[in-house]
Every structure is written in C-alpha cells, then in structure tokens.
Image (cartoon, rainbow, N blue to C red; front, side, top):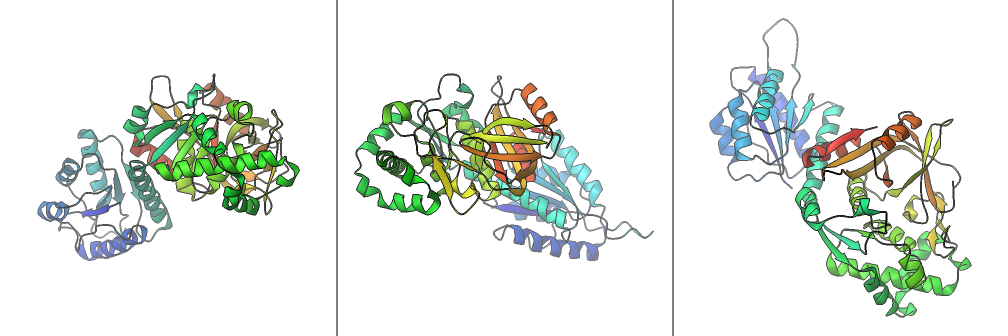
Length: 443
C-alpha cells in the first residue's frame, strides 16, 4: 500500500504560512501511513511535481492545495494515475485579518475538482481542514483504510461451499462478476466434499478444536456426544480447507444438507470461523460474506450476520436474528451459550443474545436486477437485553426512526441478510463504496 502526498501550489503566496502547513501535513500523513511517499519540499512548479511523481505507483493520492494551483497540476496527476483514488485536501486560511490572502487553497480545490470532472474522474474524496484538526485526521484515516481495503481485496480469495437453497438466489455470485468489480477471486467446492472429509477424521484427532470450542462456549455437555464429535470433525475439515486454499472469507450452504446428510449443523462451525478471523456467512450468501469481510476490516473484529425479524415501534429498535450462527466473541457474558437449532432441534448451534455497544453500523452489499451494486448503511447502538428468540440476536436502536428504516428499506427491495458491525464505520464504508463505484443508500 502506497499513499502519495502531493502538496501542489505556486510560489506567489505566503510561503512562510505554507511551509508551516506543509510540515504539519507531512507529520499527519506519516502518522496515518508511515510508509507514505512524501516530497522533501512543497511542489510549487510542474517540474517539481512531475519529478516527484516519477517512480511512484500509488494506491491513494492525497492532492493538497498547499496554495492555489491551476488545473495544469491536476491534469498532470490524473493523466499519470487515472485509476488511482484521489483525496482532495483543502487548507483553511491561516488568518482573516484584512491583510493579503495567504494560501487561497479553496479556489485551488475548485480548480482541481473541475479539472477531474472534465477528465472523466467522477469520484474523489474531499476534506477541508487543517492538519491539526481532529476531523481532518479522522477523514484522512478513513480514506486511507478504504484504499487499503480496495487494494487488499485484489489478493483475496472467497470460497463458496455448496449452492444457495431454492429461493435464496440473492446471495449467489458469479466468479467473473466478483473479480471484475471487487477484485476478489471466487472458488467453489461442494458441501458434500467437506462432509466426506470430516467423516474421515477420528474424533480424537480434533483435540485442539475441542479446546478452542470449550474456551469460548458452554452448554455442550447437554448435547449428544456424537453431535459434538461430528461438529469438531467438521470444524477441522473447514479449517484445513481454508488453510490449504488460502481462503480469506467464505459462504456456506447449511440447511437442509448438514441436517439430513451429515446429521449435525454447520452453524457453530461458521460461528467459530468468524472468531478465527474468517468472515463466514450461512445460507450460501456470498455477498453477505463479502459484506462481513468489509465491515470486519473496518471495525477490527467479528460482526453479526442475520435477518431483520422484529420491529419494536415503541422503543425504536430492530432485532436482527439468525437461527444459530454468530461469533462467540459477541455473546453477553464470559462464554457463548450453545443449544439446538430452533426448527431441526439438532445442535450444536449458537444460542445467545449479543452484547451491547454505544455505536454500531448496519451494512449490506446488495446486487440490483441490472447487475449493478449498492450498499446499505445505517447506524445506531446495540441494546444489551435478554435473548429475543432461540438462536442468536442483536437489538439495534437505530439512529433514524426504526419504522422509517424498515418501511424504506423494504420498499427499496433490499436482501434479507444484514451485517451489524460494532463501532461507527460509516465514513470508511462510504469512501470504499465510492472508490469501488457502488451506489450508496444511507438510512
């Protein structure tokens, strides 16, 4: 990942004021990205700009108007790096005191933005503020993380285990489409192959997985031993497949096959894979898995994946639920409770209420009928309360009116699976969506 800092301008403004802004800006850029490429001086001529750009191969460009610069500077940058995401950074005037205009950075921003639009670069990020301002650091940090994810996805492998059940085609992905838009390599394997692999293991060979399970979960002593053994075999089969194929995230078929053909559900396996850092979605929802991966990258931890199942108008909350799949690390209390599936009555599955948090972000990558993509972004807080239904659940008090969120998102035709990430990651998600060319819908 290479960030290129390009502080452009002309030498006819207040260079003393500009130098201070330059020094402080370099310090901030280096704080956000220690490996950033920064010039040793302000780039106050086209020759200096072009000379510094020689040899660069940036993944993110921070184009700062250290003073006003005409559109020739922007043209030189965009013609050199037409596909690279750009952050346009405007500095505030150091003083408004009736004396000379010291920087004129804002006019330079208009010049650069107009140039980019004219050159066909429709999307770029923008931040206004000095390097000492908290909002500036927060915005630049979010843009850096978004560009980092954009690059990371190009070396990422997703596995689709089995096919989507009938009526769940919204999660089915094409390998070419996944590669073209997101840069992700999609590989496929039949669910029965992992079942057969699991059956080949002796239960005694899965001791390390039992330790991992028992450290995080409780209640397994209430289940038949054969289901626990089959679960451990299956966890080992998935884990070895992931390591052998360098898989970063996966979607997996679950019902009915793992109940009818294998005899033990895959819900707890997928749950613990999320704890291991492998974003894993059930019901073969590949775009759900990608949504989990993106949200986990920005939030720094496992995320919840489930259905919106209950609207509480009085309290302004929405309950997101799934029948037995959630990372054990999201459970209230020291350990996650396990139980049996609410419909099939077979375990082990996760069975707990998720912990509360002062900030959460609800997110989804959605595919439209015309094969274009959009993202759903909403915010709120997770309310710590008793388990809502058998299975796993998180209750979100939404920032906007909960009824409005449900009504508008149903009318918009969103898929029935959503991610709940712990933390406010809206800025990063919006930046990444723009860099990827996705339509943004904020609720």
